[in-house]
Length: 328
Image 1 (cartoon, rainbow, N blue to C red):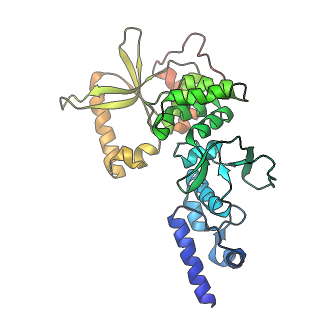
Image 2 (image 1 turned 90 degrees about the vertical axis):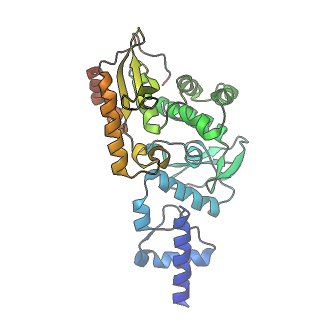
Image 3 (image 1 turned 60 degrees about the vertical axis):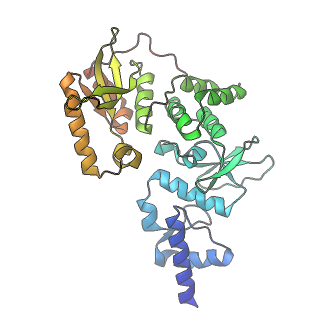
């Protein structure tokens, strides 16, 4: 009997992990069986009633951990609806890791919300919910509007940048939803962030880097700036950023070297890391023939404000007199 139960539990854990989820037990008996095996099998319980192998849990990044928790909690609590930043993670937005915890759950009016570690409860205002990526979440428009009202300015820009790609709607749809929320807490900051949104941004790192430039009052770069390949007529390269002077002359290019550039299959085209890095070096060497310097930074370096300011100043990126009109 014990061997059969062990085999069944291992199969259940394997299936949950293959689906990118924590295991939600079928019933109280299965939960007790998992609790009895926690130490011997090195299981962890990120939320009450959820289980996952410790080695697997430690291998996940914060986004993957949030997804695993939400998938397990959706199975354990089918009435729960994830909202705000948590819903954006379910919808595939590249949210900064610091906003992956706590999880945000909408509740119905009058619903008793007991304290739970790692859960932040919100009032449900009648938003539509849907199952996306195995998670019950608010619809993407409401999720974006909620998140932009609660997140800092720079994260709001990230949400706005990626809204068209992730939702299939134009930015005007999000602007209309924010208009409906006139007077809500954080609405002015959300509108300010949306006014700087640019769907040409291809990664979360690019969005955050540009948002910090805006916060610090630097000239806003153009995005996805083209350069002809001098060795192959009709072909060329794009850089994440490009800065132009008053005469329309390009004087600096920029690249945000985030993890996505080297791990996202849509960006790598199925190439291995060495091939991607070699192509990047060749691309930059050919672009250099035009004599325009290339400014490179990582998302972590952009958040290091003293360093990032020195870097932008070193490459001659000018500040806008009086800075940009933003609401933080």
